[in-house]
Amino acid sequence: MRIVAAATAVVTASLILVGVLGVAGAETTTTPTTTTSTTATPTTTTVTSPPLRTVSVQGVAIEPIEQSASAATATGIYRQAMASAVSDGQAKAQFLASQAGTTLGQVQSVAEGGGYIQCAGSEEGYLGGQPDFGSAGNYATPEVAPRAVAKAAPGVSKPVVKPPRKPKRKKKKGAAKKASAATCTLSTQVSLVYALS
Image (tube, rainbow, N blue to C red; front, top):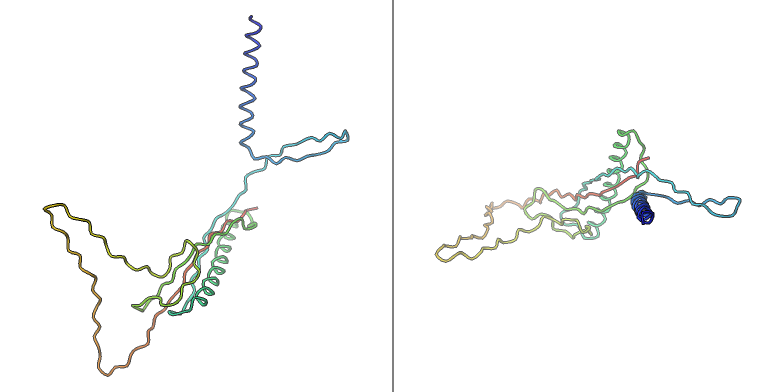
C-alpha cells in the first residue's frame, strides 16, 4: 500500500511539473527549425527570438486649399498632404532612432488619421467639395446643433432659449464689394510604426 501511495505522489508531482513547464514554454515566442542528420530522422530545434523593437510616430501636414475647391481638387490636395505627413513621420522616426542609438528599419504599419479644413478671414468658412477624409476625419468646421431643452418639473419655470443672432452688417453707400480674403488650409495626420534595427 505504501508503494502505491508513493508512486501516486511521484506521478502527480511529475505531471504538475510538466504542466507548469508546458505553460511556461507556451508563453515564449519560438521559431521551430528542422534539421536533418545523417541518420535520416528529423530533429526539431527551438530558437527563442527577442521581441521586435519599434518606434511609433505621428506625421502631420498642412496644405493650402481654395475656399471653394472642387471635391476632386480637395481630394488631390488631401493626398498630397498625406504624402507630406508620411515624410514628416519618417523624419521624426529617423530622429528618434538616431537619438536611441539604433537605425530605422522597415515600416510595420501605417494608419490614416483623417483631416479637416479650416478657413481664416471669412465668415462663410470652407465652401468647396469635401475630400475623401478617412473615417477618423473631421470635415470642415461642424455646424452647431441647437441645444435640447429638458422638460421642467411642475412648478418650475422653463429656461428661455433664444435663437442665435447674426451680426448686422452696415452697408456703405457707393462702396465696391471687397474680395473675400479667406485663407483656407487642409490639415491631416498619419500614424506610422517603424522597426528598429
